[in-house]
Length: 152
Image 1 (cartoon, rainbow, N blue to C red):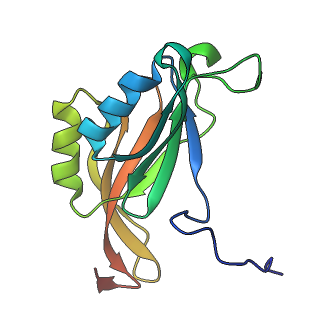
Image 2: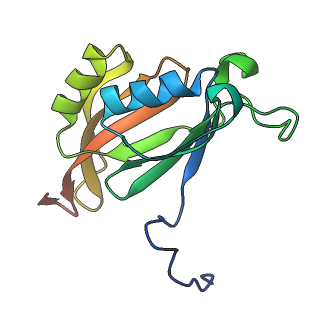
């Protein structure tokens, strides 16, 4: 049975994620350049540390900061977790080919080249790629080609 939900706060998606980087300021700049994110909020603390940030992509939102082991000992960057990722980001874009070109030019490591994933006429078909950013986070960027056999 679904859980009843009230509308989200204005400007907030139902679900958002936080990503942790060894150098969050550099990561924010890179994510904007490579992937097209826009900075909505950047709160800096002592010494220019990133206390909180909100980056938007369309109606999506991610928060970026550095680890704070004294407050949140369970939060780790991929480098602090032996390169592991505990989450991966999936983002729909309008043009996967142009997006992949932009990311590659900005230095993204393309893990899986552009390809079509087709689940059949009863489901959907997408085209996209997987890459990793300089902080070690993995991202999938896809565009919808068809849903229930109908072209997008």
